[in-house]
Image (spheres, rainbow, N blue to C red):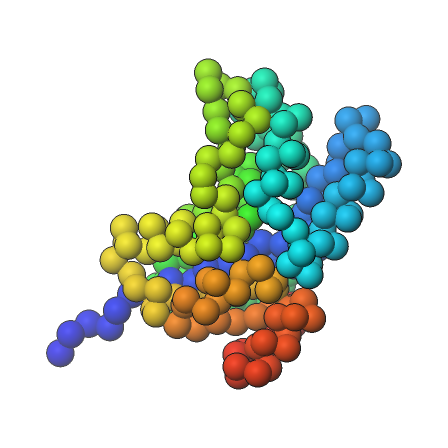
Amino acid sequence: MSAPSRRAALFDMDRTLVRVETASLYVRYQRDIGEARLADALRVAWWVLLYTFNLIDAPKVAAKALEQLAGIPETVMSSRCDDWFQIYVARHVTDAGRTAVHHHRQRGDLLAIATGASLYASRPLAGMLGIAHVLASELEIADGCFTGRLVDPLCFGEGKVQRVRRLLDAEGIALRDATFYSDSVTDLPLLEAVGEPVVVNPDPRLLRIARRRGWRIEQW
């Protein structure tokens, strides 16, 4: 009798493991240290609204946002995000998310965060929850500093599916043996690709789709 296939549990970050949109928390942090203005906060709030309803050109917005990072050392961003996470984000990590991660760990599943946020924003969460793998949007680096450009593919939509497939192929796990937790209709490509889609705190469009397809719906 053959052993059961190994499974994977994939978790979105914003509004899933973390109950809020972390981009808004980061611009609040920037305002508090004097690096952003009210106009910057309003622009991010507009982007978040467009993202919620899947009306955003994510690669274009990401490219625009990253221009301001050109020349900044990677170590500076990593240190800032560690501080930002502890002060602004950690308290928003959901208890239900912690429980789900623990459940999958007990089952022996591969654990991964799959988020459109940057590695620097998501790695502190992975460290807190003991999640070994982080699939996130990568920023190009040259000589230890950001170039202001992304490394393709952006971890968004089909790009997130590509990054997940790359990890699971390396681990010998099929997408049909993966569970994916997400709040956003922008993650529909990956939700449709995995064997067990779970929608968490879903946006209105994803809620309608989940009900129509009989997907599991949870409130964290």
